[in-house]
Image 1 (tube, rainbow, N blue to C red):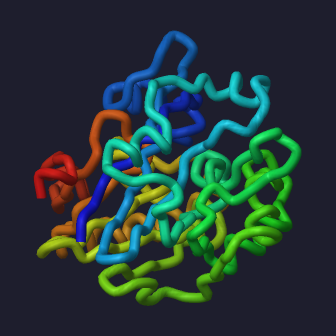
Image 2: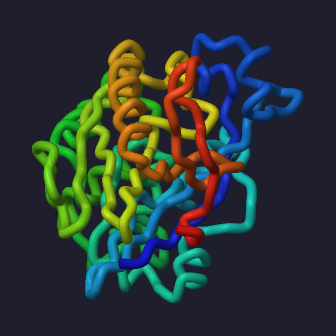
Length: 279
């Protein structure tokens, strides 16, 4: 098995939204922002190559939305999904499976693209099966008013109409060496993959833990639909991660790709930062 970080570009989001009830005077010490209170976040996917399987976890935001839409998120950086896959030696046609942690646009936007003349939407990964939790599928196709702006029908409905897809009903092994668990605080049925790599367990954190700055328990995003449930889920997971020496792989942390954590007098905190190629 080989793991390849796949950078798909950056976006900017309001620091207050990303850190919830934590005051700026505190969160700005651990994650910088600009004069407009905007923090820069990467959209870092993960490619797992295991024999004939080439499994991509999340896809980034893509390019099919309008300029007006993208202007709200200040996209930046030169990386794209195709460029990063090429650097790893692959193309979108090589991908056999796509695991979508959830259906918010910055996680699944590039699962679907325009066709050549922009008259229809087509699956980006024509040879892949898309894996999504049933809870999240139901949640995203019947969005609540709070999340409606994050669930874009052009990202979701073409999967049902034109792609091979598989709905995950419960925690369990998805592929040999890859176990998934469902978390519900951020959004219903968020899929968190646990990857057995060498003698490590690498956990793709998605929006359960967007960055190393979110490790302390109160650092919960305002985007979470059930923040108190997120708090519970984080507390249990972080203790487990410290005890078992998990490698936490961050989807959105511009400054840290991975880290381990440990128990301290102040609770669970970062132990060691690293990159996946150093394992």
